[in-house]
Length: 360
Image 1 (spheres, rainbow, N blue to C red):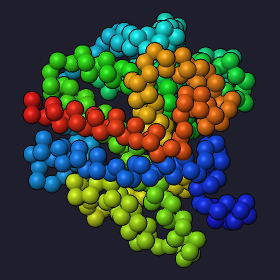
Image 2: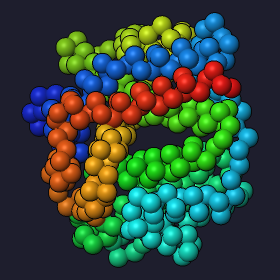
Image 3: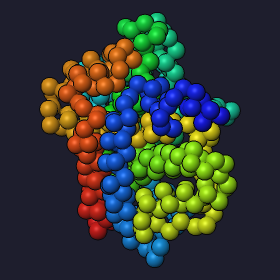
Image 4: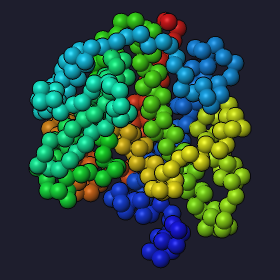
């Protein structure tokens, strides 16, 4: 079905239609994918560290997300609120004021109760109505980060309400910018508040693994998807064994010898519905996460001069293309050097974990 559409619409590459929807160029996505695939060694370095911490001779695919250490730290909802509002306010009074309004006006449903839908999300609604946030808060550090993430979405939607309905929402490539940035603000505040090396390493490892899942894993899935579509164009109908072979090759490239993939892992391509219902959706996750990490690096360099430009960028919603909006921040997403800055943030996290490991 996709090949028919691509042929009739004269798309030269299987992913071209997704780039059009995301309002982003092929060159920008190629730059992202190239940088990420060349830095798979960051993932391998971390999993070799995790293997040593856990005391295993080998780590298998089912061990990847096993907790490095038990996470006993708990936060009250009020403590989480104070930490988030304070973290946001230090960055920008505008961020802090909006975050406080969400709490004060009870636009957040954070109560954990029977029958409530799982997950966490921010509902934008329409420009003339404020956004809503839903999650279930249990007091873990991860819950604090999730709340900060969704409030980032909420602030993005709140600021973009000045636009009309058709230019209110940002495309997928920019949709995670405010949320990941807000999460980073709170992450640095939260990890700084933890005195125990065990607690710091536990939080850091959890964060690193979330980032790996969003950046490296999604890019690997994108390369799998692209190879499958090109193979189909070349050879026609493909059997399940071909899918499994290409899946293993693209996944093994991420982990190298640091993680052993079991035979059953070969079929994991089959559960990812995005491949069928929204082809090439997956790279947007990596794009948004690494984009924000690169912007974080820019914030560290520019300091207060970055803040006003970032608020203005979020306020624009989807009124211009991502390339134009990011150009206001002095960013060229077609330049590999920009994406390298984001990888450096991740690499520094792994370095911090390596420094903490001997202290636990």
